[in-house]
Length: 301
Image (tube, rainbow, N blue to C red; front, side, top):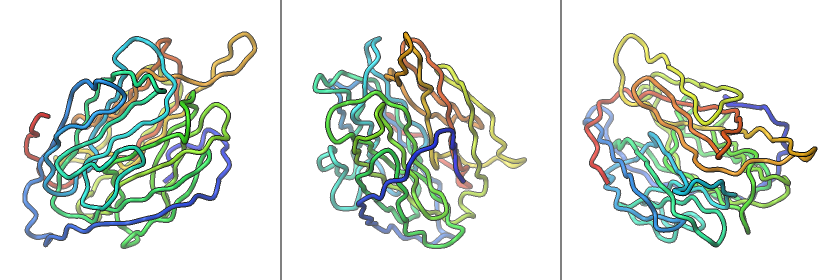
């Protein structure tokens, strides 16, 4: 399902590669999942922290925020838990299992930033990775194991191939067996690298799924999702889209700098956060899924 299509964007052929690693379990023997969370402050634009994951980490929430009160152009935006798949994202280095790499990078100044990220750790699923070089947007074919398999995000890294930029759109979701990616700057002609890890789960494991969206939000927005009459497991992120509304200053249109960006999924709520200093408006969408599996309390990182 398309999250938002508020902007007309051209589709550019991308150079991509796909790889995967399997963690196989018998469905009938799945125990309770666990959760893992890390909160802290980076010394510069990158952070590498311990992140004890025993199975497949499904993205539950993320918040990245520059620690000063200034707005910033953005070069890289990364949430990347360590993986059994060889290699890593473009600027992650070798992020080994048991750790997580985060970045909110402007230019060479590498400003400190606050981070709060959590995953639901489940013992079933086949992790896959895809990487591509795109311009503005691209659609990348995925290795979907079955037609009704449910796509859930594990990690992502958006990276402009050069200096930082004002941002117009950031988005990533699955649609009809393809990954749709947007990372548009103010000119719409610069290359970016996308790295993403994800998993396809059996539909019985994600019985409640949906999409929520809004327009003209300022700093943050929250909506209640219908999880049904029976209590379910945690809500995870299946895709997202942020579209920043351009401003008009003295007759000149310009796009957005960023102070903070994130998605949270507490209880039956979906919360989106995106702001600069002036709390300019943005449109947004989130694909979500509620797991049918109990979750243990997370260790704090």
